[in-house]
Image (cartoon, rainbow, N blue to C red; front, side, top):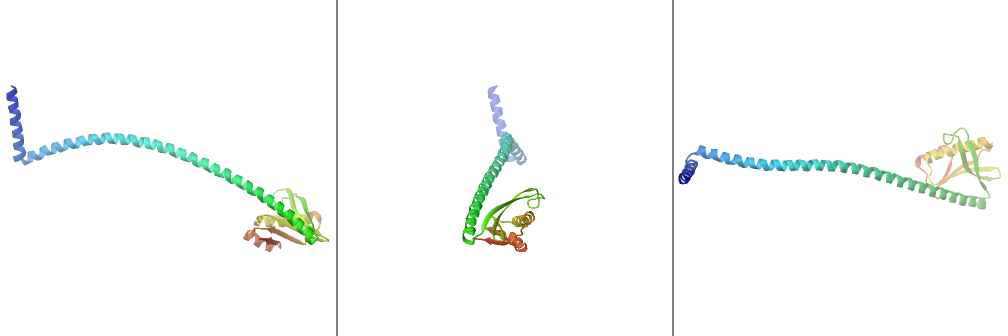
Amino acid sequence: MNGVYVVEIEELKASILKLLKEDEEFRYAVAGLVGLEEILKRLDKHEVELVKLRKDLVKLRKDLVKLRKDLVKLREDMLRGFELIDKRISALGARWGIMIEEAFREGLRGLVEREFGFRVERWRGYDDSGRVYGYPSDIEVDIAIKDERIILIEISSHIRSSDIIQFKRKAEIYYEKTGRKPDRLLIITPYIEEKALEASKKLGIEVYTRL
């Protein structure tokens, strides 16, 4: 029986080979089946790869979400850090500005008193109507006095338009409180903004800058 089976197999092979050589339609059909099987095998392989890729994409998406949260937190931390640094720098700058103004004021006091015979003092009053700062507050201004002449002086490291207006209102309050009208209004500063300079000219305030 085995011998007969082998003979049949060999005959089948010979018949198939003959058909492949002589029958074009059969040859295309076999080629199509072989190709289809290969395609199916590749699709199976690709499906496995796609499943793996999908898992990788899901993991990547989770990582991106986590990274985005971490970046947002990092950005918030950085912004808070920058704000803290800016506040400290501003506070330090303000402190130095006050120290410089005080030192400059003391130097000016000595110069004016020694060279020109003026007496320089610090006048303090209370603005009960809130005219200077927009609310009731204490106000201060430097005064140089000689005989009957009174000069009001404002010394600052940086003068803005608002400073000009506030100085003018201080002068008005000084006049109202003391009954003595200042002969001159002087501002001494190393830096004054352009709009502030224009305002000082309109309000009759003398400015000495870039000393």
